[in-house]
Amino acid sequence: MDLSPDEYARHAHRLSDWIATYLRDVDQYDVLPSVKPGAIRAQLPKSPPAAAESLDDILADLDRVILPGATHWNHPGFLAYFANTASVPGILGEMVTAALNLNAMLWRTSPVATELEQVTTDWLRQLFGMGDGWFGMITDTASISTMYALAAARERDPALGIRQRGMAGRGDLPRLRIYCSEHAHSSVDKAAMTLGLGLENVVHVASDGDFRLNPDMLARAIQADRALGYRPMAVVATAGTTSMTSVDPINDIATICQRESLWLHVDGAYGGSAMAVPEMRALFAGLDRADSLVVNPHKWLFTPMDCSVLFTRQPKVLRRAFSLVPEYLVTPEGDDALNYMDYGLQLGRRFRALKLWMVIRAFGADGIAERIRHHCALARTFADWVRAAGNGWSVAAPVPFSTVCFRHVPEGETDEAEIASHNAAIMARVNASGDVFISHTKLGDQYVLRVAIGNLRTTAQTLERAWTLLRAAAS
Image 1 (tube, rainbow, N blue to C red):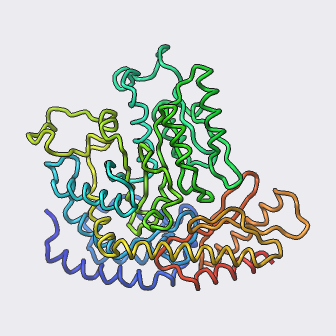
Image 2 (cartoon, one colour; image 1 turned 180 degrees about the horizontal axis):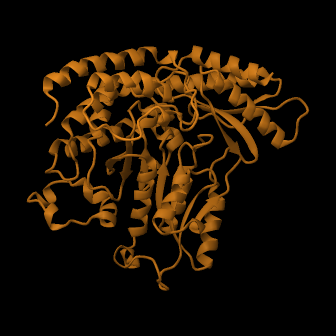
Image 3 (tube, helix red, strand yellow; image 1 turned 60 degrees about the vertical axis):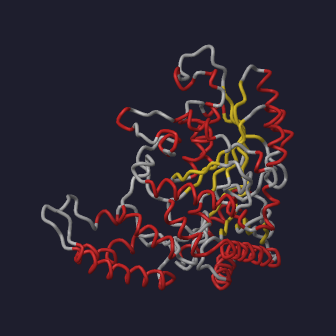
C-alpha cells in the first residue's frame, strides 16, 4: 500500500520549502559540479534496500548526493548550449502532473489531457502569429518531433507503399533524399538513420556568408539528384541553427519545395520561440507555407524539461504514418474524439500540456515577449563588449537572437589548431570558476566560444562576470 496522504502532506511541505530555497539560492552553487565520472555512483549502494527507508532519510540525500552532482541549468550563469529555465508555474505544473498521473494516449483515457493539449498548442500558434490550419501535438524533444515530421514526409506519397511493404530489398523503390543546411541539427541525420533512409541520403547544402542555407545550391542539389534517378522527399529549414542561431531563408526554400513537391519541415526548436515577439516575426517569413514546424518550450519558453511541440499542416498524413489501432484500444467515440496515440510512436503519453498551459497563463503573451526581448538585448550588449574590446577579440557570427559566437586570437597567431587550443583553454578556465558555464562550437574550421542567454535569472551582472572571467582567462 502507498504511504498515507498525511505522510505526503508533511514531506511535501518540507520539499516545497527545499525547492523554494534552491530557486532562491541557486546562484550560490557552482554551475558545474566538481566531480569525476563514477564519483556519484561510488556514494550509492550497489543494491536496492531490502527494507523500506524513511522519506526523511531519502530527502536528506538531496543535499548529500543529488545537488553536489548536478549541473545547475537553473543557475543564472548557465550560458552553455541553449540555456533554459524551470520557471515557478512550470514546476507547479509538473507537481500536479505527477499527482494526477494521467495517460493521454486516448481521449477516453484522459479527456482533459487531450483537450488541454489541443487548446494549449493552439494558444502557442496564436502566440507565434501563425495562421490557421495548423495541428499541434506535444512530444518530448525536437529530435522526436523532427523524426515524426520526416516520417510523415515519407508517407506523403502512399503509392510508395512503405507503411505496408517497408523499404528493405525493394528494387522498385528509389533512394529517398532529405536536404538541409550544413549547419542543421544532427537530429535530421538521426531521423534518416531511424527511418531507414540512411545517412548517405541526407544532403547537407552549403550555406551563405551568414551561415544560412543557400537556396540556389538547394535547387541545384535537387536537380542533380533527380537526374541520377533519386527521389527528393523533404527539406529541413532551420530557424535558429544550433551553433550560431542563423535562420535559413524559409520563404525562398518554401518556393522551391512547392515547385518540387517536397515536404518542408522547419526546425525552430530554439529560435521559434522568438515568434512570440511580434517585431521578430519577419525573420520567419514564409513559415505558413511549411508542412511542419517544431518549437521547444523547454528551451526558451520557460517550461521545465521536457516539452517539444510539433505543428503540421498535414495531420492526416502524419496520422497515416503512425495510426494502428488494436481491438483493445477501440473506443465508442470514434471520429468525434482525437486520440494523440494515432500521431506518433508512443502509446503512453505524459500530461505535458498542463505545465505549458500554466506557464503561458502565468506570464501572458506580453510577458513572454518582454522576457525574450530582454534576453536578445543582453546578447547584443555582450556582442558589443566583444567587438569593442579589440586585442584579438571578435564576434564570429551574426546575433539574430540571444546567442553570441566569439573568440580570441592571440596577436600574430594564424594557426587554427593553436587558436582552437587557446580558446579551449579559455573556456576551461572560465568554467572552472563555478560562476558561469559556457560552451563552444566550430564554424567551418574556426573554433569559437558561445554564450547562450535563455534563463530568466540571467542578468547584466551575470554577463559582466562572464566577460571579466573571459578577459582574464585570455591574458
